[in-house]
Image 1 (cartoon, rainbow, N blue to C red):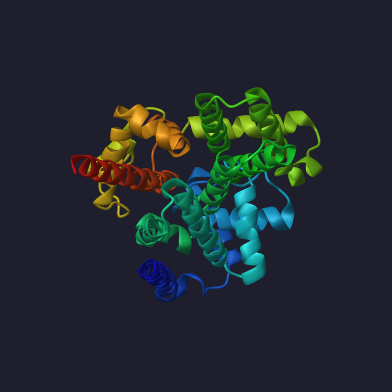
Image 2 (image 1 turned 45 degrees about the horizontal axis):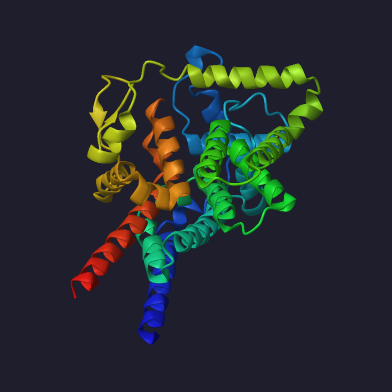
Length: 376
């Protein structure tokens, strides 16, 4: 028992040291003051310039979100910049600029919360403290996570609320209106951060989870959170409604956002996510349209993919035992396989694949242990 406590303390110290060391090494991302003039010039000459002749350079997502977030907070105009993504995540980046004069410092805050919630969900899944802590330490080394810590992107805050939503689902002991409203609030925030589709997939995951578990009052449990989520999504556009109170204006804005998404290389081959996970082969759609390697990939990704495949094959023994995590992984994987794919999108998948690997590993260990005891 004492040795277990020592192991837990050592793992916790290793996590803290690894996190702090990373921040110190990358302190240059958190020092520069937000430069509005520079981003305004960059945006005016970017791929979003109205005049095609002005399009001389590419504005990266992290700069686009920072510029959008600041503009949203200071002007309330949500229908002019980056309309294809809901505004809530960009408000958060804007507040980081407002509070710290730097768009990346807020990511540290989201990173810490993410690690805490990831640990809690891992503990719920494995019932094993050292394994859950070791999982956090391993995930800290993921380059895809490290990028989120140093760039003003939307995926990290989105992952935080996604983990909070799933934690709420697996932690609920009894049905209550407050719990249903909380689930709806979390779903609404998820829908308002980057893609409304992510909120829908999380809602669908909840529905499948309840049906397979044969929950009582399923209709109430899925409709109330869904309705609350819809109103939260609408509320995230509050500044837009102040300037454009007609419902048709909001409908047209969402229709325009949908058109932009549908125009993103519709001929892109399906299923490319599996090639990236398994072989680090990402098909580009620019230039000569060739396969390239992503810097995020590591040798564990094929292991995670193969492990998830085993969960699908052994549905009753593995998939159903870790139902919520596996349903999300399956639904999100299917979503990624049907659209234009960026490796960064895997950030919302990898934590759950890691959870599944830990669960299956423990299941196998216990099965072998039980088999050995029977032989005795």
